[in-house]
Amino acid sequence: MTLGSGDFQTDRHGWAELLPERRASRPLRGACRVAWAVIGAGVTGLACARRLAELHPDREIVLLEARLVGQGASGRNSGFVVAVSHFDGGLEADEMANYRRVNRINQAGLDLLRAQVATSAIDCQWREDGFHHTAADRLAMSKCSDYLRYLEALEIAHTPLDAAALNARLGTALYRVGVHVHQGALLQPAALVRGLADHLPANVRLHERSPVLGIENGAPLTLSLPNGEVRADKLVLATNYEAAKLGYLSRHLIGITLSGSFTRVLGDDELASLGSQGEWGVLSLHGGGATLRLTADRRICLRNAAEYNGAALLSEAQLAARQAVHRAGFEKRFPKLAHVPFEYAWSGVEGISRNGTNFFGRQGDNIYLAGGYNGSGVSRGTAFGMALADYASGGQSPLIDDCLASAPGAWIPPRPFLDIGALLTVRSRFRGVGLDR
Ligand SMILES: Cc1cc2nc3c(=O)[nH]c(=O)nc-3n(C[C@H](O)[C@H](O)[C@H](O)COP(=O)(O)OP(=O)(O)OC[C@H]3O[C@@H](n4cnc5c(N)ncnc54)[C@H](O)[C@@H]3O)c2cc1C
Image (cartoon, rainbow, N blue to C red; front, side, top):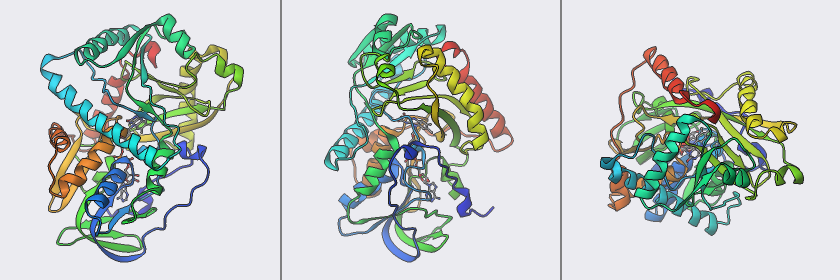
């Protein structure tokens, strides 16, 4: 099947719609010859292109983005910049080195983003005082005990919280136990990637609305686009779950569609009812539980739906239907705000591997790839993108070693087994979720 421009869906339902208009870069037209091409301008591709530009100041790096910056998962996530990963299941002694490895990668990405946001004065509502991990129902409560053991074993700064303390901080009586992990940042995801894209080094040339439709091997590699062609010595794929469209990882990475809603801007009294923090982020201790934010611009943002939709965004009709699920999650937590309407709904697709691993390294002659972060890719994708630039340039570093140590991806069967498997995976995500959804 031939790939076309129409295979890169966009919509007007995302965090970008909450931001002012931005002038996009021009689509690629004609032929060009470069040393480096990077495909995909999400956090991975942006970090990779920036680092390549630093490493090769005399070379031009072309960054090709099929959509507008902010339309991919990097502009459609919940905006948690994770330092400390939450691993499902109890603390396993022989996994300690792995926990530490993943958290080192997360921390490297967080540090990098913090520096870039500060240096380029990116207005993305950056707030760095960690997140709350919460439990309302039985299964999540048992996971809370596991998580506390993990935090203690790894000596990660945290504050355990009971129902009263959570209510005082967040303004909801739903949660029975939880923990505040002190590391981690919250941000407006579309504002972050737009800001990063608008402050790229001078030797990076970004082209938006420039889908790569095919890659021809050879030296140089040839990339075909709707109105042009790029010939490059080296290529980086930062295409997340869409690598399969170009023939990569099709049996290892799939796209699961998540969706959520934003309220309108809250009034002073409504805001005052939401605890003492002014702004906060809540991650559920159950993998199927709701992710919530009280954002800097005074909205509640809740995401509690996930489904296999053929790696596509939800249609208008699907989004409208999912709002009932979002609404139930919202009113259950904030009955006193039941009168507050939702103003936006949005969906996004995350790249999932069957065994929860991430992908990093060489994919062929002069072709490199990083991606597939299973719903936790803002910090990790940034670190992977930067490390991949170093690795593809022949460098060595402890961060590269950490990224290379990712487990190999488990095999995913073709359709129709894929559809059944994906359906069962999503179903198992919600097993026992109860009140936490
Ligand atoms: C709803 C949702 C909530 C999430 N919440 C969080 C969270 O709070 N914290 C967190 O850490 N992670 C979260 N994630 C995951 C996180 O968003 C991703 O892991 C991360 O953004 C992946 O970054 P990326 O750059 O690898 O991929 P993407 O951001 O998907 O970027 C890949 C880019 O490649 C482009 N592309 C693909 N194919 C081509 C092609 N052929 N030609 C040109 N361009 C192409 C795409 O248009 C896209 O912009 C969430 C994901 C979703 C969907």
